[in-house]
Image 1: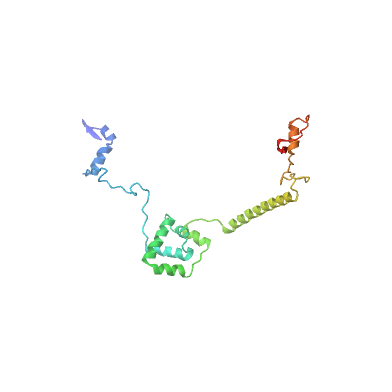
Image 2: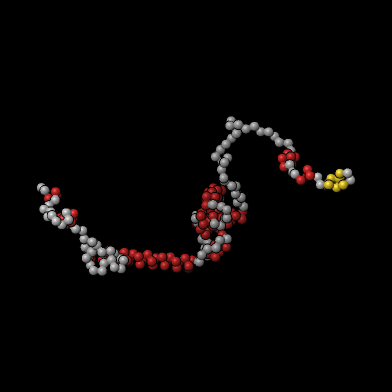
Length: 208
């Protein structure tokens, strides 16, 4: 607000903000740096998308060794205990610990294993997993369907071996195996092509 001729009026200039001027005031004195292709150093990480991960503290290292006692060298399963870390990072951690403290790595891998249930693993990984009984039931149903399908295919093959000419009555009625149609001989085919009005004495294959 401004006072003009003893009256309070709105300053219209204050309704607009010059962001460039504000940025220049906040930035202060800047140093001009001239870069060119000879002085600028570029490597494979310049335009990479790799994100920096947090370092391993003592608590996380103890959890890593616990993962070794539970899963051995299954780094994929161990990585589930550390959200945001991949299998490759767990592998690198194993290599670093193997160089730094090989005795502890050896004792952990050769020592007694620690067993956990699915509920404990779900709490450690903050992930909800399906009930193993339900999964096993689904696998049993799929295996039963596959066995029934194989039994039908085997029965159809045995029926074909018993009747290779496909002359059995009712073959193909249930949709298991279509009836086999006997192919006509060459002489019958040529007679059919002639319309049945001419007699075919032979074919060119019969000439010695």
